[in-house]
Image (cartoon, rainbow, N blue to C red; front, side):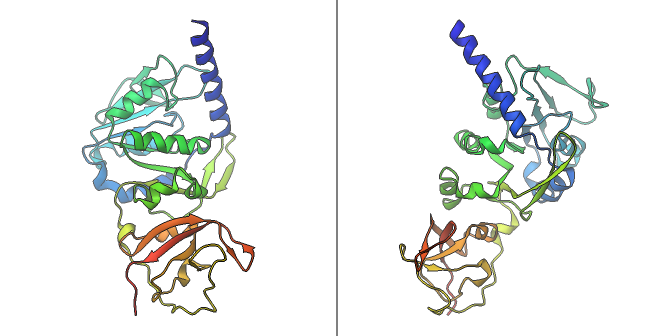
Amino acid sequence: MKDIKTKLSNRNLNTARIVKNDDFYTQLSDIEKELKHYKEHFKGKTVFCNCDDPEESKFWEYFSENFNHLGLKKLIATHCKGGGVDYWIGITKRPYKKEIINGKEQPKEYLKNNGDFRSTECIKILKECDIVVTNPPFSLFREYVAQLMEYKKKFIIIGNMNAITYKEVFPLIKDNKIWLGMSPRSMTYILPDKSAKTTNAVWFTNLDITKRHEYLILYKEYNSEEYPKYDDYDAIEVSEVKNIPMDYDGAMGVPISFIDKYNPYQFEIIDQIVPHVNGKRKYVRNIIKNKKVEK
């Protein structure tokens, strides 16, 4: 019994640390800008916001206010502050009546343990939902995505752009199991002290979106002087996405920002490396091939 209590205590402390280090609130304007592209995906679905405090979360505000417009079946959110009494909220219609949170009536159910997305109770809710939409802790992004993949869930989540380089995430991008959302990079978060912080954040999803079918217009022609070969990998260096040559059918190294323009019908992602050109180290490059070579 002592070991069990110790584990629970450590887990609660870990949750508190997570909250302290990852407490960023997404602005409603950023949520609206992205989620307007997914309306057809939400109809008749249960949406789970499993890293959200309904008292503060703009995700909860967006979905609860647009519940009927989106045609949701159910909306659920779990509250996780660490050290306090955590709860979950689930609604199946608008309007609704029960607990009052932040001046609004909400149905509240208390959790036996805590609202950590890895807890048994939260995983049980996860299994029952259709789509997960939230801003998970950046420090736990690898573990968070792994859980979504394990339970085969559809999702729209926020992560740091550099997550593209994680060894746990890149293979999912390469295999077309996860891709970037509609909105461009950079979001401004509101911190607990109400100050603002701009981060290199992007949306990740596995729901089909129009951007996945847009072809990147290529206009450059290949020449060996402008596109040098790597010292340690059989591919050419393309320093800017806009300069991808339209007539080259071999392997090309492009910046990770390419993922924002990636159309799987136009390009194939082969690898991810840290290459060298004439002895000079480059930043991480995605190795791609052009499926539709223009000659």
